[in-house]
Length: 184
Image (tube, rainbow, N blue to C red; front, side, top):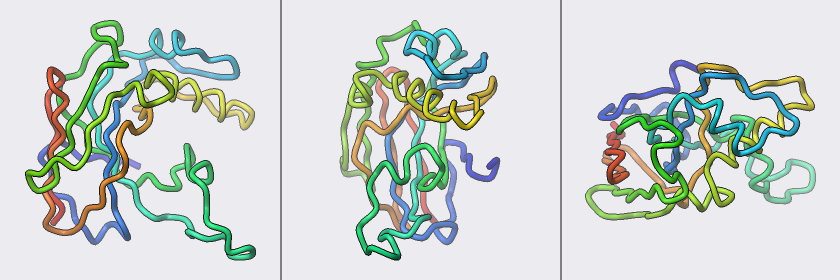
């Protein structure tokens, strides 16, 4: 998974992906493990060392239609199991979880100098830490834990933006800084 992380300003090889799209998120860097069931938003904030702006590169990694029924896959078919995660670009200014009201963290996503998407982190279950709590609780029945040192994406607060070779993306997180990348 280490090859999935890119620094801001990276040139990202387009051939690594099938049908890449980009989503605006916040990354929670854990300093303590989170084991469900029963993980709350407050537990997530207490376990988090810092939060950093992040862009998730998603890709088509599962069949888009069920091979038996031909029914289209639903979003829950791909959430939290890396079925769509293909890369993460981190950057901007890390912040402590209590330094800002995370619900009000906003971002503008530009593609080739044109705003494609805007959003507030509250779009993730009313608070992006709620997305992390959901994940910790969802994987608990399988004996899985979110570990100290993990970077957990809270969930996208914009719609996915299609990208292709030659596209330049920039996400402006206001006071939290920005992230940029170019698909080559």
